[in-house]
Length: 336
Picture (cartoon, rainbow, N blue to C red):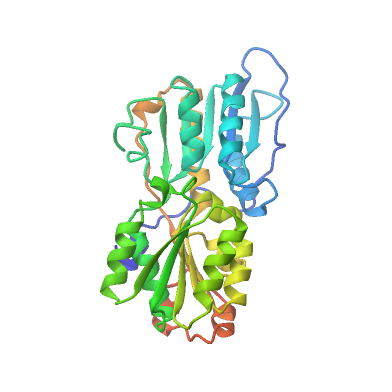
């Protein structure tokens, strides 16, 4: 899929401005009319970006009439990219018997699916819900799960294409992911990535990692010889560890492209992916509709409405790269 086509799919996000943050657990007064939402975040509670995304979801709920202390209680758990924690918290939240659960990332949704086929689940930032076995089809989910996908498999090739456009000396490119947390165990993006590598005569490297030490080993090896490049798959583990990845890429002179705009803003070279604030905002009306009696089986899965290309010129300069003017012109944000 071309970037221009992605641009044409953009729409104005539902809400702008700063989000209002509610406590991790809103202690609502018990009684008739108080509904409960469970939230299982695959990311880290210490991450300001993750907290901002969740706050955007909460703010839309407020605008829809749901207020903590009056008619709603929210119980939130943060797994920090740890698959074991996801399973533990999924069991804990399901035992609380909430009216609906917001699930962030693919492995979180999988963990919740194993615990309940009854409680409605609305997922956010899941790439391949049909392939993961969460639902029958995007237009007709058919069970207790629906939600909002964040990306298509074709971006596995588009990431590499953009990386080569900004760093044409790349001759070896690794796509890095954690098999425990990446879509399809990492397989979802591999086909398009490898096809793009063949078309650009680039050696594709599959780089599964499960720890900081393994991340460091991959990036260090890429930097030992010129021509190394790095593609970061959309993956809760990669998201949680993005700052150390950005630092290692800079230290080893490895150009890298990321799936989340915050990574480019945090110092990464460039990023292309869905606007997560928009995804979380759009999830709130689905939760509202379920609380008012609609069923997940009748709510079609939604695709992203806003993609962002972000380029960090400061990082490009540090890597000795010149960003083409044509690429800067189509970027949503260029960081000087």
